[in-house]
Image 1 (cartoon, rainbow, N blue to C red):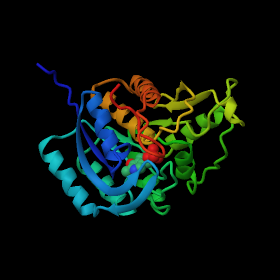
Image 2: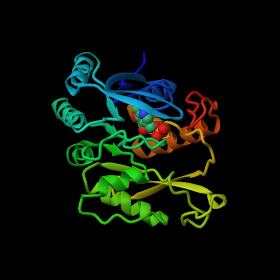
Image 3: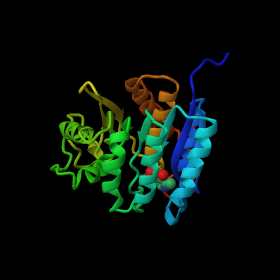
Image 4: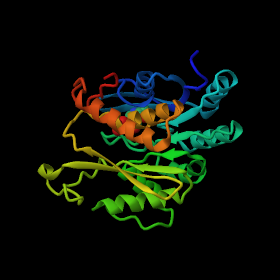
Amino acid sequence: MGGMTNKAILLVAGSDSSGGAGLEADQKVIAAHGCYAMTATTALTAQNTMGVDDIHQIPPEFTRKQIDAVFKDIPPSVIKTGMLGSAATIEMLSQALVDYKVEKLVLDPVMVATTGAQLLPAEAVNELRTVLLPLTFILTPNIPEAKLLLTNSGKVVADVRCIEDLDRLARQLRALGPQWVLVKGGHVPFKKDGTAATFPEERELVVNVLLGPDGNMIRVESPYADSKNTHGTGCSLAAAIAANLAKGVDTVDAVHAACRYIEAAIRTAPGYGKGHGPLNHFH
Ligand code: PLP
């Protein structure tokens, strides 16, 4: 008997033709965790490790049909979202989450790619904040995304200079609705003493902070990895969290395990491509 755990996960995200980020990465991560991935596609991208050449947004009515088709047949235990791409898609998704009473939403607020491509128009950020954050189980922004989500929310957003600044971002974001917030600190590596590194050679530590319903701030540290092969790191981390949650792992352990998985995936990256290469999802 396989047990009663429902390991089916629905991904609502964009496709990356180079396979390192987006839906393609998510599916590999979920397979590597022994879970089952289904997809509702929000956008197609023509991209590689050097950049995004073009984006074809899927009409939200069609993405909704994919969500409906999946729910009619294989209701997922977890939904994980990535690139949503437009305010209309965000609205469509929020309605679907309400209609299907989704409790486990892993929301990775994809906004800008490493290479600088805008993956969510600025005017859609308000929509994401107001309609999706209150429906979110765990929100997984990086530092730039955390700041963008808080801009226009009436909060004062300062630069991150120490670990307490990350804690503050997590607290401010949790006040906007999500049950859990994981602020990923990869964009501001720290020195050993817990202050932001000024020079490249001082970069020792990446600190992620996890804040949950009990108000405890949990720090998940990783050694700083000086690698250009980080394409799809954010997508992959959120997908790993989603997979661990689908397997019934509690949230704190799900995040710890996902961070360890990503560390190894960066360390053993295959080095494909001329730009920011993909991770090794099967290690
Ligand atoms: N393309 C798609 C479709 C994505 O969902 C993402 C995810 O964040 C990216 C590109 C950006 O990936 P990265 O910034 O890791 O290169």
